[in-house]
Structures are given as structure tokens and as C-alpha cells.
Amino acid sequence: MLAPNDYFPPFSEQEYANRRRTIRASMKEKGLDCLIIYGAYHWGGTDTGQVNAVYLSNYTAIPHSYVVLPLTEDPSLFISFALHITNAKECAAIEDVRVGGFDLITAVGARLKELGLEKGKIGIVGPLPSWWTITLPHEHHEHLTKTFPNATFETVTDWYEDFRLMKSQEEVALMEKAGALCDVGHEELFLASKVGARHSDLRGILDGVANRFGGRYPFSHIGSTSMTNPDRFYPDFFPTHRTLKAGEVVTTEVALGYGLYFGKIWGCYFIGEPTPEYRKMFETSVAVHDKAIAEIKPGMTGKDIDKWVEPFKSAGYITGLPLLSGWSTYNHRPHAGVVADPKIPSRITQRDLDWVYKPGQCVTIVAFPVIPGTNKGLWVGTTCVFTKDGLKKLHAYPVTKLRVVPV
Image (cartoon, rainbow, N blue to C red):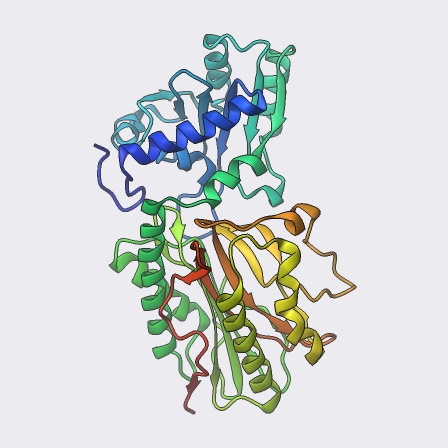
């Protein structure tokens, strides 16, 4: 049994066995002899990052990790610090934990030689969602290609992340718990909002909620701006000492959860009554948000989603972000449902358009209208999971209620 803890709350042994079995079956179809999964980076919060590695290892080392998953033999986890190995072995879902030194890649290469993969076909999985296009450090790439000149290396991050997007029952249960934590966090954030409150102090409330319930957060956005003379429609990733003022709209993105399983609420409320223009944007957003969640079903494709943003187009709005995005720990493909600004390249690809939604996939629905050529915009959004019948919300927080802080 893995050691219970707040950073890597363990799933059942069967959950990890199912992941390895499913991935290996697909590896065999693709002709892959082995995967190298690189772990690095997080998002500036209290999460551990390294999400693709943790999916198999249930552990991250500092500052980076590697998981080697052969087609048939036991997987290996590589960490840098020998003094951390006892902790790693208590938490990790992989028995073979090895100390690889600060660079790690030499030890990873030695493991590939043990497996006889000098001429193997090896899949490389990067540390972040694939649309960031980050894979291995330059030095690690050089070491592998020079040490294994007869091997074939293929980047397969997109393929690998499709497994993470499809949630098991155990994962959905943890996502639901994360959703409830977000509900608590956002309610406390709203109740603490008053004229003069600093954005940075509001962010600190979210830190406190996460810590109080043994949770973590990857990031949060908090921002406010005047409704009559706005200077932004996107909130701050790193909140400053800027304060809330009467006549402002507040936008928040609250992501809290457990063990790299996070909910996410895209919230919006007002310091004083909203102006008619902002009220219209909010009400249109609520209508788009609720209709999308009520009507989007499994079996639909990315091409089908655009019809739910038609009310934005009719009102003369563009979308700040796609209506639907994958949510497998962090923002993830597929993306769908945009009213494009011709000045900004679209993040929608053919793969997004062809994507078929299935039960078990987690997504966010965010209605995010922006008035073209201005800094006027807001959002309303919820994390959901596809069931066999449609979308199930992971949050009870009243994101669609027009909430006003009295002044």
C-alpha cells in the first residue's frame, strides 16, 4: 500500500495496473518498444507539476524526474537525490526507483541499454500538455541521440495525454472532491471581496483554503477593472497589491484540488451594480454556458461545438478562449467553439475539429465574450465530465448567479 499523503494521494493498485495495461496495449499497436516520460515544471502554485510522469509514478522528484516504461518489463522511476529515495519509495506507484544524479539522462540511457533497446523504437512524452510543444532538455536529447544512433525516437505526448483525459471512476471521484474544494475557495473569495481589498490578499485566501483541507493549487487568476474605463479583460496570474474599487468587474479563475486533480471555476462578480453593457455580457454568457452544458453530448465532434457560440457572434462579441477545452489536470486539447478575432491566430486545429467526445473525458466550459477593439470582457465557466448522457458539472458554486458586492 502506498503511503497516504497530501501531495500524491494514492489510488488503488488496480488503477495503476490498468493504466500500464492500457498504455502498453496501445504501445504495441504503435510499434513502440518503450516510453520515456519526462517530468518537469509546474504552474507557480503549490502543485508538484510533472503531470505526465506522475500519471504512472505517483511521485515527482526535484527538480525533475523520468519514468521509463518498457513494453513488457517493469517500469523504472529516476530521481536525482539519494537522500530522497526512502520518501520516493513510500509514495511511488513504481517499485524500481533509482537515483540517477543531477542530470538523470545518463542513468536513463543505462536503463535503455539494460533493456536491449539500442535499436528500439522509443516514444518521448514531454512534461506539459502537448500544445506547449516542450519535450526534453537539449542536453538530454543530445545524449540519447548520440548514445543510441540506431534507435528511433518519436514524440508521442499528444497520444499519451489522450489516456489522461479519459478519467476512471477513481479519478472522477477525486475530481468531484476537487470541485467541492473549488466551491469553498470561491465562496470565501467572494465573501472577502470589498472595496479596498487587495488582489494579492484574495489570492492568499485560496492558498489558505487549499492548505486547510489538505489540497493544492496549480494557479489562480484574480483581477478587477473599471466597467466604464477598463484596462483589461483578463485577470492577473500573479495578483498585485491593486485593490478592489467601486464600479469594477472582478474576474477569477480558481483551480484547487488534490494530487494533480483540480477543478476549475471561471468566476465573475461586480463591485456595485453592473453597467447595462456588462450586465448584457454576463447574461449572454450565462445563457451560452447553461445551454452548452445542457445540450453537448458524447459522440459529438469539435465541429459541432461552434453552434453554441452563435449568440456571441449575433451580439457582436468575439471569444477570449474556446467555449470547450479539455481539462486533464491543466488546460488540454481538444479545444472547440470560437468566434475568432481575425488579428489573433486561432488555437483550433484539424485534430480539435475531428475530436469525438466520449464518456469519461473531463472538459471546461467557459463562456468568455469580449467586445472587439476594447478591454471589455468577462467569463463564466465550469469544469465538467462527460457521462453517457451528457455533461455533468463538478461544481455547485453558483457561477451563473449575478453576484454584487454592495458599496
